[in-house]
Length: 566
Image 1 (cartoon, rainbow, N blue to C red):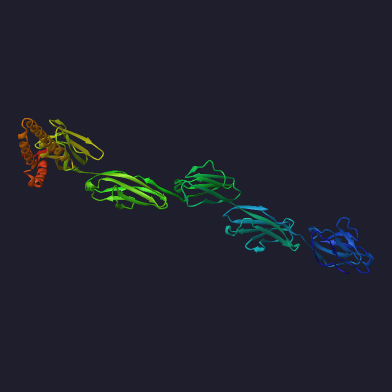
Image 2: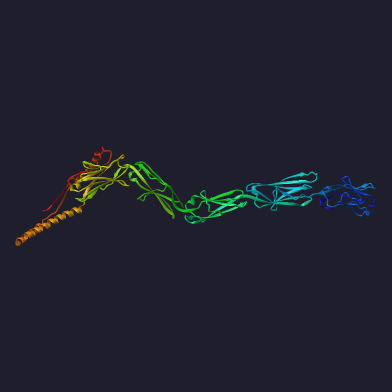
C-alpha cells in the first residue's frame, strides 16, 4: 500500500492525499478523524471531495478542492476486505490573516506636540500573524504584540500597538503595518498617513524698516496652519483695525507705531495664534512727562524733571534761557541751594539726530527779599514833567509799595507836585514817582526806594540828572536875546548922534568881547557822596523798619546854579 503522508496546504488551494493498494480490487474507505467519508468513489456527502486515480491499478487518491479550515485533520486510507489501513496522514490547513487594519486609517490626525499610538489588527490567521511596522523602508521597533485564539480553536487574531514620541513624528509621514504568517509569507499591508494638526504658525514681517514717520509700511502675516487658516484679524495697540481683513496691511506710520505694536491674529479650526511687531519708526522728540514750573524759597533745592521719547535715541539738554551753559543731560535738573538770581526760565530740550528737536520751558520762582534794579541816575528836563522809576522784583510780591522824599513818605496818589503810581507787570512791580514841573532843587534831591516783603528788604538811592542839551539851549537863547537887545539899543542911540555912535560902537564891541557866560554847579557834598549814599541807605532801612511794607523815599541836598554876565 502506498500510504498518504502529512501535507500542509493553504486554505483555498486544492490538495491530494495519495493512496495506492497494488493488486487490491475490493472496497476502499477514507476516514477523517475516525469518521468514514465514503466508499470507493462515493463522496456524495462531501461535494469538494473526490476519489481519483486508476482503480485498476489500485489508485484511490483523495482530492480536496478549495481546502477549508474544516479540512484540517487526520486522514486514513483503509482496504476493507484486506483489513489493511494506512498510517494517519496529517493535513494542516493554513489560513492567511485578513487584510490588516490600522485604527483611524487612512489618515490619523493628532495635535502637534502629542505622541502617537498606532494600533494594527491582523485577524483570523492560522497560525497567528506576525506584525511589523515600517516607515520610510525601515522597521520600527518597540511595538507591543498580543494574540487571541478564536472560538474555533484554530485561528488567532493579532494586535500590535506602536508608540511614537512627539519628537519623532513628522506631518505627512506614512507608516505601514505588515502582517504575515506561513500562509502569507510576503505579508499583507495597511498604510496610514500622519496628519499633524497645529495652531497657525505665524510670521509677521514689516517692510521697510527703519522708516521715517509719515512713510508707507507694509505688514505681511505669513501663516502655516493645519487645518487651514479660516480668518485674519489685525489690531494696533489693542484696538481693532477694521479695514484690514487679509494677510497684508498697508499704512502710513506715525510715532505711535513705535510704542503701539501691530498684531496679526490667525485662526483655524483648532484655535488662533497672535503675533505682534513694533515698527522702527524714526520720529522727532515727543514729550512723555511735562516738566512743571516751581516756586521755592531761597536756599532750598529746585528739582525739575521732564521725559521725552524719540527714535533714534535722543539727547536731553537743560539750559537756562539766555545762557549757553548746559546744566544737565539727564531727565532731571537739580539746582542746589537756589539764589534769587537763579530765578528765570529754564529749557528742557531734546534732540534726535538728523530727525528733529523739541523743547519745553519752565519757570523757577525763588521766594526771597525784594531786589531793586533801577538805574541809579535818571534824567529829566527842566520845567517839564519828570519821572523816577523804581523796578522791584519780589517773590512773594511786596506787602506794600511806598515812595518817599526825605523826610516825607509817599505811598500812592498825589501830594503837591508829586504823584506815585504802582503797576504790576509779568516781570515785577514798577513804582513811578512823577513830578509835575521840574525845578532846579529836584536835581539836588536824593530819592530813596525801599521795598519789604516777608523775607526781607532792599533799598536803592536814585538821583535825578538834568538833561544838559535843553538847559544849555535855554541859556544860549537868553544870551543871544540879551545881545540882540543890546544891538537894538545901540542902534537907537546912533540915530541921534552919528559921531558919538562911531565912538560908542567901538566901546560896545569892546564890551562884547568882555561877556562871560558861567555855569556853576556847586555840590558842597561831592566829596562825601559815596559815604553819604551808604549812610543814606542804612538810614532809610532803619527809618522805615517800623512799617511792615515797602518805602520809596526822596532826600534833598542843596546845590547851586548861577549864570553871570560880565
